[in-house]
Every structure is written in C-alpha cells, then in structure tokens.
Length: 176
Image (cartoon, rainbow, N blue to C red; front, side, top):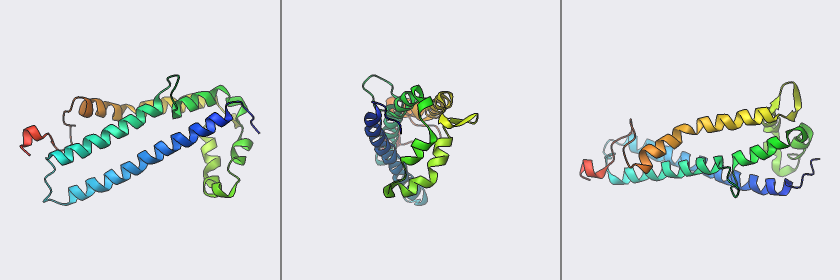
C-alpha cells in the first residue's frame, strides 16, 4: 500500500475537488432543466434581464469552477495540481493499491468502475502502474476542453456582450 507523506493531503484535496466538480455537474443539470422550460414555453420572453442574469451567473460559476480546477499556483487545490503531483509518483501508484481503496462497503458502487478509471491513466505497456505521460496527456486534454468555456466567459461575462447563438438578453437593447 502506498505510504507517501502527502497521502492525507491528497485525500483531503480529492474530497474538496470532488465536491466542487459534482456541484458543478448538478448546477449544469439545474440550468439545463431551467433552459428547456424557458425554451418550451413560447409565452416567456427570452430577451429579458432575468434570463440574461441566469445565463451570465451560470456561465460565470462554471468558468470559475473550470479555472479553479486548472489552477496550479502554490496555494491552489485543483484537479490538475493533484494530477501533476500524482504524475510525479506515477511509478509508485499501482492498480492493486488503487483498487483496494474501493473495497469498503461505502465504495461498492465506485468499485465497479474503479478498474476502468485506473485504466484511463496507464500505459498499455505497463498496465499495472500509472503513467506520468498518460496523466500529462489527460491534463492537456482537460486544458484543451476548457478552452471553450473560458472563451465564452471572456466573451460574455467579462465583456457583458451576447454569446453568438444565444438569445440577445441585453436589457439596453430589448427595452425590458
């Protein structure tokens, strides 16, 4: 079993990171439901300040979450920083220890997916150890995937201008 001095730190980070990412996913579900209700009701004027506020607030919250999870500053607690630290010890992070972390009853549901999760970070040549190169590839993929929301946030939230393809909800132009 891995007995690294940072193990407790990583566990607390993982709990905090998980809470934030799960919260973000719940926020997305709530927003998607709200937006589908708005779209399916033709009597609702989508060009009003209330809709604009909801769009901007949701987008801003999601953009902040993404930025926090990519932050690698000294005091940051983020998914990418955790992954970078894990990559430093990749040769010590083995399948057996990882899977054993999910053997307690409260992790029974997660156990079913633990092997596939571990497989996402291994090199096929050494399938029982985490690969630093694969972890870095995953980090690069996260950074690439985050580009869209950061661009939307810069375009819409920071500049307070409409997003192309989204209803124009600027009350100065609609008169609402």
